Image (cartoon, rainbow, N blue to C red; front, side, top):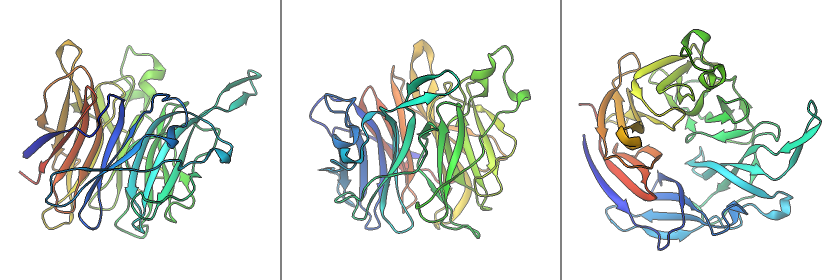
Amino acid sequence: MNLKSECLHLFDNNLPVLAPKLFQKPTGDFVLTCMQFPESSGERFFEKGFNRFTLEPDKGEWKKNPIFNKCIEQTQGLKWNESSSFCNHLDNRGDLIIYASVGLQKQILDSEKEEFTQGNYVIYSIRSPDYGKTWYNASQISDDFSSLIVGDEPLILSKGTRKGTIILPVWDNLAQRALTLISHDNGKSWDSSLYIEIPEDQKEKDQPLHPCATTKNPTVVEQKDGKVFVFFSSEGSNNLFGSESNDYGYTWTRVRPFPEVKVPASSKIYAVNLRNKKGKVSNNIVLFGKSKCEGGTFSPTIWKSNNLESTFKLKWEGSSASKINISCCYQDFSGKMHFLYKENNQIIHLHGDIFDD
């Protein structure tokens, strides 16, 4: 691997930055999107602080273009408490779509306890036909009585009879289980999969039942044979887990552990099924996460496997820091890989070739 690292000094203040993401436009330009919390970070999350930075081909300077202001109008009758995560991608038409999990300041009646509880997270999608210059109204894609958190960027199937299907990995904050939302009409309507469960005999001994049962922070890839595979972490284990779907993300096979990939319990992990130098999907999987080091520090880490039947091998490990937040793993049109992570609130962009060794 030949990877280069750069620190992106994109902001002129010390406000916290949330989950920088990267994608490439058909023109070849790269677009980095991220949330920067305003001073009153708990209110009107979508109405302030969303930024887009554009990097033109063969030019090394990022240009700032504030976007996303007032994308969700308060006139819809919704008030925002907090957001846990967001992701973006280009859909089948080439429109920029942002999915975000938002907590509602709405009181929901718990009929069993006969009391009101804090409103749950719901997922909204927002569409832009011109890469963020203008936006359509937000659309709620999950119901008020679930509590769904966006996991990773959606997968658009490229093979088989369900080509074009969008699969969005999410996890239920109440049930502590991963699942997927599935759309066959480019995001107009959505189905949900069954929960992804860890079997009883795979749960680690001497651990409470509930933490070991969690399946969180899912990321999905399409395999060379067209099947869908999901990776996820668990609250009760430092192992990475995975499961396969033979029906385009609706149901999942028996969960299998990947003990060679050690990640902090319940941490985020990102996966990409690599395209080879000819642009065709291979069986090579790249994982991007963080590993725990001595002294309570963490390191950004890259693993790679030639196929899901072989073990993942450590390919790169960065310097350790007290706070590492992994946020993006992306392969561009030329085949180069891009990794984004935050180290103590500084955005690090790691990029280069990671083809077959």
